[in-house]
Length: 419
Image 1 (tube, helix red, strand yellow):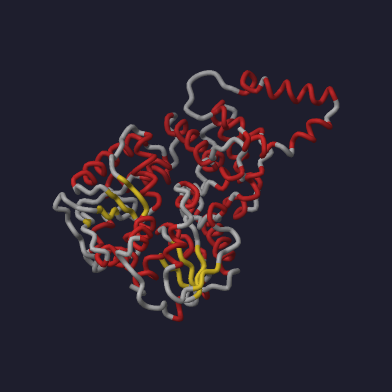
Image 2 (cartoon, helix red, strand yellow):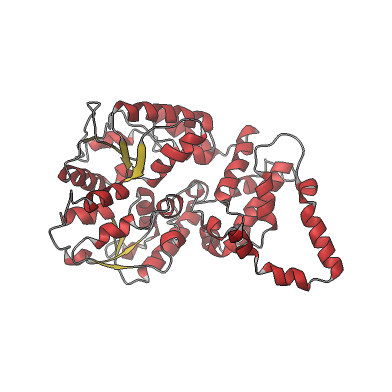
């Protein structure tokens, strides 16, 4: 409560300066909002918080990635909430694709939550509006396409991307049911075979007994939660729960922050709980370093000495972990880390999460290019992250003439070079 009052403190003098009649109208309208604004009938949207968002001073708009990329006030979190509200109460027709599409132009970065006096995320609000869009039969075609890919191939790529381990020289380790760790690879992680190899070599050097089970791996189902096809999401949750439990591992480590979120909070929202410790691999690698199970013995090469860091939004804000990546980098001999202006919990998005890149790819690329510019301002030509989607997004944000000069690396790729 104190935190909410602190965020609202600036409004006090404004209300006090109102004349008596204005203040009376203001306070009456605020008290009557439930009666005046709440629709009748059945709906899934979180109308209460959509209204709160609509009536807020909207400080979040100064830090919304899609708004900054589009330079249009109609992309602001509060405007999206307002349109979501109007869709819900029937003042905008669901056949109006422009407004329906707006409900998906979000990268899930949750900068809005940092600024919100109510402590909620517009990401979550938009998901409740999508629930209604789906329930009424208006799921957009670009979402239907993703659902079809997942149903047809068990991955978001539309083909079994996990099978590419064979052509990319990635070792597949099948479980014997008695693992220390299950290394849970994300669909998009398979696009970065060198990262996977680095992570596996780190685990091997630490003497960890682990499996990958790539012949039976499926997507975590994260995209389905964004789309709000929770029936199909539950099918994927049950498949993953069964696979994870078959390994016997007490600890599940994933190289994808979205997978960690999905396997934990999102599955639990469906009533499916995996009774294991599920963490991002950087947290586990930090633990291995702290326990002395792996120890850097070499200096980093000159071409990788000066780096800047891009915190994955989900790790920094959802998992509230901004220290693991920095602790790992801090133990690499000879490495210089230059922090970008927007970092840790204030990080700006790579543009490649959520649903925005499905509905408006150019918008997502523009957001990625803004983040790339912020990282370039540090003077470093090596960008380090710990998320396959971030590494994809940052690559899309590079100009053609920058692609030879700037390197995008996962933190494990740097660490393995000095072990």
